[in-house]
Image 1 (cartoon, one colour):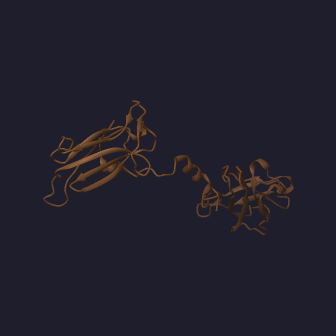
Image 2 (cartoon, helix red, strand yellow):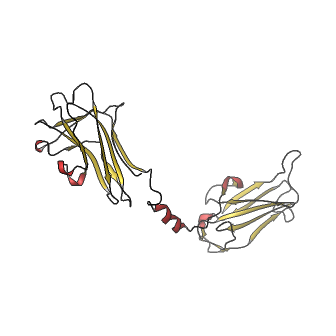
Image 3 (spheres, rainbow, N blue to C red):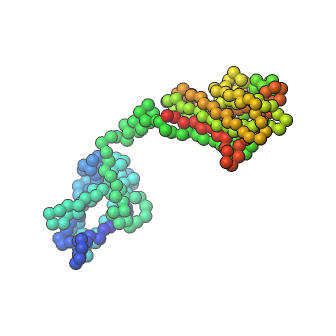
Length: 272
C-alpha cells in the first residue's frame, strides 16, 4: 500500500480550508469509467468509491486528507488509474492518479496521469509496429572513424578490404532501408593514384561483383583529399552487417581513408 495525501485550501486570502468538503476515490478504466479491479498480492476485488469528508473525519479541519491505496501495478486489469474527485460546494475538481508500488507518501498532484484510452494495448502495439504506416526518419545504426586508415585489397584489385570501424548492423524490419557512406580519401605516399571504394554485406565477401555500390576516385594526390560517396537501397528483411571496403589499382592495392577529427568518415543505415 502507498500513502497518497493532499492539503485542500481555498484560493486567495484569507483562503483557508474549504468547509464542507469531500473527496471521492474509485478505480478507473478506459476513458475514466468505473472498473472492477483485483489485487494481485491479496486476491481481493476493488469496487465502489471511498468517501472522505469533513463530516466523517476523513478530511481534517485543516483540509488535509490521506489514504493508503494499492499500487496500480498490483491491480488487474493492467493500466488502471484512480479517479480522485474533490467536491467543494457545488463544484467538483477531478484528476487521475497512477499510484507507485514503492516510496511515498506522495502528494496527489505528483502522481497525476491520463485515463486509459479505448485502444487495447495489443491493438496499439500492432499499430505502432506497422512500419508501413509510420517507419520513416529512423536511423538504425551509425559508425564513424576520425583517424586516417590504410587498407590493402588483394587479387589484383578485385577483392576489397573492409575499413575497420565502419560496420553497421541492419535490423530485420519490414520495409526497405538505405545505406549511405561518406569517406574522405587520399593517395597513400608511394601508393596508387586510383582507388576503388564500395559497400558490402559482410557475409557476401568483398569481391568486386559483390559490391552494393562502388566508386573509383581517380587521380588522387597526397596533399588534399576527395570524397567517396556511396549509396545502396536494401529491400525489407535485409538484416545483417554491412561495411565500407576499398582497394588500390595499378598493381598497388593500398587505399587510404583520410579521416580526422574535423573530417570524419562514416556509414549509416536509415529509413525514409
